[in-house]
Structures are given as structure tokens and as C-alpha cells.
Length: 125
Image (cartoon, rainbow, N blue to C red; front, side, top):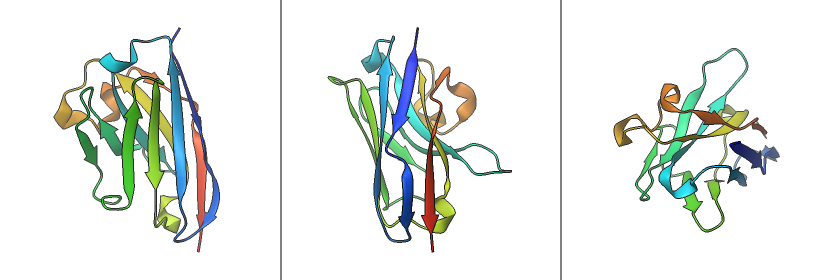
């Protein structure tokens, strides 16, 4: 049974930082591409950052230069380092895994088979 468990969310002031983690189990982790998505109330789920099986990364324009996605295949863990946080970054953040996503679709949620329960990030001004 595949499980993705996010942690590290919280409340910070604008300009602050958070590091999200996603622990994966029940899958051959290094064969899966991983990504972070976020969803604010009343809005669609949007791709934030993705990392392909061999490490290539892609970012949404809104987070480029502020967020960094990484993975530790030995620990089956995905990370998202978020710096210079803005109020518009407030959302529930989800990690997701896919064995079939093409690199150019890393931020498209329809390609992902497994999802975590999410961790809330709140940024106050």
C-alpha cells in the first residue's frame, strides 16, 4: 500500500521560510517522479514544483527563485524548501507520485497516481 505523508507546514510571516517533507512508503521510490501541489480554498490544485526520477526539476513561475524541490532516494523522502514566503503562498500543500508522467507534464496533477493528505501553509502579511 502506497503512503505519502507530508509534514513541516505551519504559520509564518511574510518573508519567512518553511521546509516541507514528504515520506513515501510502499513504492519503489526511485522509479517515481514526485511533485508538490497546492490548493487554496475555492481554487484549483496547482503544480508548484516537480522532480523527475533522475533529478531534473521544474517550478511554477510564481515560485521560481524562492522554492527548491529535492529528493533523497535513500530515505524515500521529498522536500520543498520555501523561502521568501508571501501571503499568496497560503494553501494546503500536497505531495504526489507518478511512475508515468513525462517531464514536460510534471506540474499537471492528472498524471499523478498517489497523493498525500496535505499539510497547511499559512503566510501572514
